[in-house]
Every structure is written in structure tokens, then in C-alpha cells.
Length: 213
View 1 (cartoon, rainbow, N blue to C red):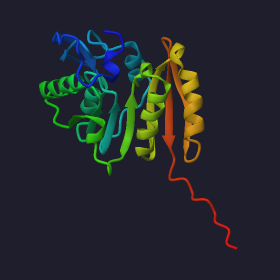
View 2 (cartoon, helix red, strand yellow; view 1 turned 90 degrees about the horizontal axis):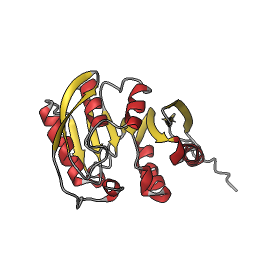
View 3 (cartoon, rainbow, N blue to C red; view 1 turned 120 degrees about the vertical axis):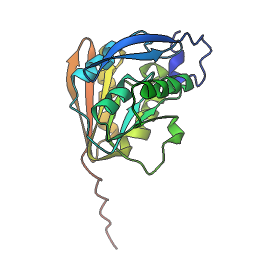
View 4 (cartoon, rainbow, N blue to C red; view 1 turned 135 degrees about the vertical axis):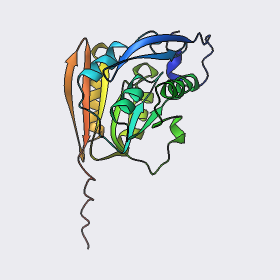
């Protein structure tokens, strides 16, 4: 499959729908996955590290799973915060269809699985949780994060899990340099070859003082 799942709106590989049993939000559940999406046979190691090193999500508001795949993060957020609205965002239409199927099967009516441009511009997020698509390349990844992290609410956090040998430390340095004013960036956890990076938005940066002539 290579990295097709990262940037194919309509994967060319066979769908090969399958049912697997996984543990999400402490519950053993059955979900549907397919070929042409990320980690179709299990919850991948990075996402498991993210689950083990993040606090419970906010109980309400808008929550974002960026790069949802078949939905392990979005479904977990929805199970843990039934009164929140969870946005599962991906460019892969097959992945979004799987999220919708799985949310319906689990009785979750608080999940919106949508393409990036289908998220209304006026929505901000009380948390972002993501196992981001590192293999799309540095420029694409930076553009993705530069688009969504500024949509955090004030005093809200983004939690990203990145494999150490795929550039987690360089990504952390870029995040620190890019989100310098009004944010803080630090490594929250390390495990199984992954880093969990926390980006916190503290508030709206002050405007520059204007010196009048």
C-alpha cells in the first residue's frame, strides 16, 4: 500500500472491508476497516502511545482528530466526551466513510467525518489530537499544522504523536519557532520509539505597539 493512504482522496487499492476487535476508551468494540487506509488491522503503536499519554478530552465543545484514518482517535474522543462534537478530518474519502460507519455502529451521533474544507471557518477547537501523516513530506506536514493549530481555543492544547526516527525532534523545533507568540511547545512523553508533543495556545498574542510620529 505504501503511503497511498496519506494523500489519495480515492484510493486505487481494493477496499477489502474487514471487521476487527479493538479497545477504545476502555471498551472492547468491533469496527470496520479497509485497505487503502492507515493501519487497517489494529490500532497502531503511535496512536496507542498517544492514548496512554494524554489527559481526558474536554467534556464539551468542538474536538478535532486531524488525519483520522478509520477513526480510532475520533471514536475514542466521542466515547469519552459524548456531549462534545468531534470533527474527524481526512483527505481520504474511504477513511471518512469508515469513520461514519463505525460511529453509527457504536451509536455515536456526535462525530462529523469531513474533508478539511468542509469544516466551517468559524469553528475553533478545545483540543486537537493527531497521529499526523509524517510521510506526506515536510512542506505538506508543516502546511497542515500551520492551518489547524491556530484554530485552537485559548488555553487549549494540541497533542501530536510522532515517531522519533521520522523527525519528531525537528518537528518540535519547527513548532517552537513557528508558534512562538501566544503558544508553548514541549515534549510531553516518550515511549515505544515515539514522542508526544504538546502545543498549548495561551491566548491571542498582543498587537505590536505603534509609535506615533
